[in-house]
Image (cartoon, rainbow, N blue to C red; front, side, top):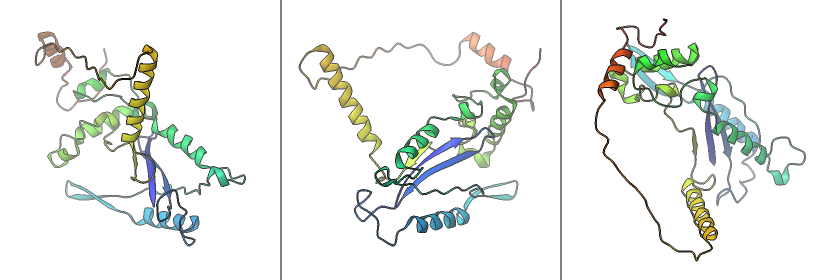
Length: 241
């Protein structure tokens, strides 16, 4: 069995997972699975696993939290494009479907941020929705708790506290990211050599120039940071002139 999964941000701030789960043969995805490994059996296994899986969360103020999948579960059978016989859901359609959500970040779905926060007071100056502001502020506030510091919620507050990879897959599902990077690098090398009409070489040129700019904040930056510091208990609240 192999899989590929992407995480999609919804407008309400929840993370919705889309997964392609494949039954492989003895030698991998290039061989058919045994006759008993049917799509119906896989569907039953997915539904049973989603209903039973539990992950223990942190204990906050004496209350234990447990994470489970929600009730929204939609399992559909994917047919190979080579044997679709008029089926609507093919592997090519699914590839386009997964790619759509792979490029949908928190900032596009919820109107949140595309960069980390340095200060909670920044929230008051940002053009984001009230809903996104509350979600980010909640993650920032929880990130100050000692019992939750291992979650690094403040570092990921701009992503609504979710720090998981947007895309994961099993090793045998398809090609690896390293193979794709190597293929892109080789393609660019060949294109560059063709553009110069010269022979291909193995020489790699690295150009870098570093200049020391200083450490810490300048006087102006320090004044600006101090002016953005909110009164105690009002972090993240919008300001009005």
